[in-house]
Length: 359
Image (cartoon, rainbow, N blue to C red; front, side):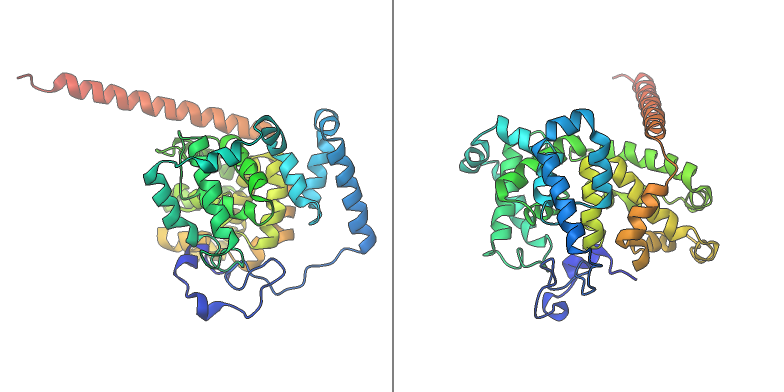
């Protein structure tokens, strides 16, 4: 079984680390891997790199006339050497940086909200504690993470800082220079995960309903099991969505998922969630052993290792029988349902006020 990501903050660093990092910089933790990656031939790597570099040089043309080619190449996996630049372009961060020269450095000069700054300081050491960049406060990772989160809290005071943002910012800093990571982070928070981090979490509640509707379509037996045991989506999917899978998936899987996520948006996170839920509970034998809420949550929160492996996740994502229209239909349905609930609550509240005795 894969180590559950929720246990990261409580694991003793000295008892689990290796003496040297893996190829991704991890000394320990569930995202460390000692398995060699299946190598492509040198010729294949060079060919893919050339294709990506040509696309980036002609980015506007591809985005306007041949987006499908970009999407398909993202699904195959972006070459490691090109990934930072590709993410910078896929997210639209290159345009944000171009439109806002010197803004990042100017934000760093500002003091920020004292309460928010304290919250960021308390949280920054918790992000990827087994990675070489974030091992201690003196490492460049924690310093740059504080800077990116502080800058964003000033840039978008409506959102400020939410703990779920920190792993996303730390993840981006592992691949990009601080200023570029900041602008990708802005794009992710303000576009890809728009309104996810606003107090009240109304959007994530709406997306929980959408996920439930899509699960009913893609895997009815699992949907019925969750309904039977009253397993609400928010109990298992909140961390997946708010942190964009950064605290859930093994590293190589996470990179491939983000290649797709930055090309196709939040639908990718929905699909990954559906694969994890469906694969974890698809067997009747497993569902039979999950006799209640707690047992079912344990299975969903700690998926078996093979379920979260790179090829399994990506291949099964592509096999899901879901169209863009299916997401749109569920979105409209959930929006109408929530509007109806809100109207009922207001009506009940109004009736209660009218029936209150007057002085």
